[in-house]
Image 1 (cartoon, rainbow, N blue to C red):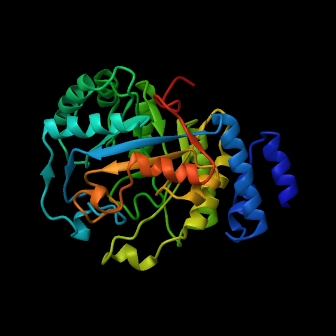
Image 2: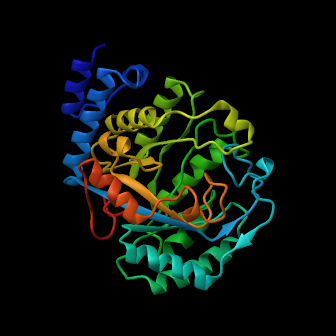
Length: 332
């Protein structure tokens, strides 16, 4: 196996095998082979998007200790970062959404923890929808849902969802992998476009695990896939395992792009960085309010980026940004 043959295969848009993905992932992050893979990912991404990246923006309706106990999450009850629930008002939610729209976000995401009442989520979402422009796309970032609930999301005005089968689901989380997969099916059957990702990547994850997850996300023909690294929450057991570098994250995002069919236009990475943009990431997120990777109650005062700072990062690595509703959550 060699890089020349693999790049030729990519240029011919031929699907990669698990073994080929593992080989690309096994190259040292600072090797010539990896830089060529990143360049090929960048070429594909610019060809598919016309060199126009997207910036989506998310805010949370609540912050609460969550019984799902995803060990990498600052909301996890077991991590003890947040001990009491706080919920923002409907007026505050509308304010966040309208501000993100005004800032130029290509889609507005509304997030809740798993225990937030679904009926309340729908009620506030309907009010948010009324205050946004008709063509502004709303995306839900919520827990596992039945087909009935997924249809209610669609009826409420959501164009899609962000949902992922996380790495080591059921081991590092209190959730069942089967339930995550079933929810993905339900969202799709309800007519919701699904954005997903290979995440949250840590140093302990093997190349085989990553290749398996790349192939799984590819099988969904999602709105986008990509790769995001785990952000360490200080003082938690998971933090002791460390973090991968931005360069390694960029490498995984690039290999993920090569592993996706060309029908998948978007390739995300998180958190936003120039290395990710150079490696072909066409989607960054701006964030407000609660953030599962932050210990601040308002991530705009911590790790969260704004729409404008994301635009600046993209400009620094040669990308223009798309103006208008997201193309990823449109019709395939």
